[in-house]
Length: 200
Image (cartoon, rainbow, N blue to C red):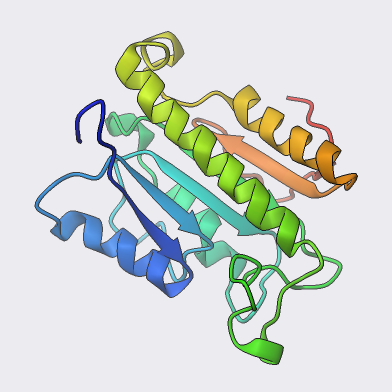
């Protein structure tokens, strides 16, 4: 890890997210965190777990030929929080209605008309940015002693990310179905999606 004033994060979208994940063990330093925007293709049963904090954004349903269970969901599951990893976050959007989403992170989609963006793309980009900012806040707060020791050694609080999601919905007058998992939360086979509000 790096010092209080310098944080080094590694990550990427889609295949670059997978490449970033696989590169962590090859680096000569330990990054302070990983950011995965639907990183693909990952398998929590075979890929080397990360023991650093991770922020992952993904989708319920396969889109753009990216299998949902081998992307952000897998990255969350393959983050080892028992080895002092500091915590993990997964925000999972429900894209059941249109089957889109994987390329919402890119300005113009991934492959033009082949895999374009959904009508939630702008909301996704803005909310991802705010979520990453909250993730980075958690890393710095851990150094300040404001979290971690009070949260079983984990850096992130679910309520902080709930606030980000609710605030963004309110500003845009939209209600976007998402599920939020943090730290020790486990993914269920059947996912209950919450529209706009979170009750945990």
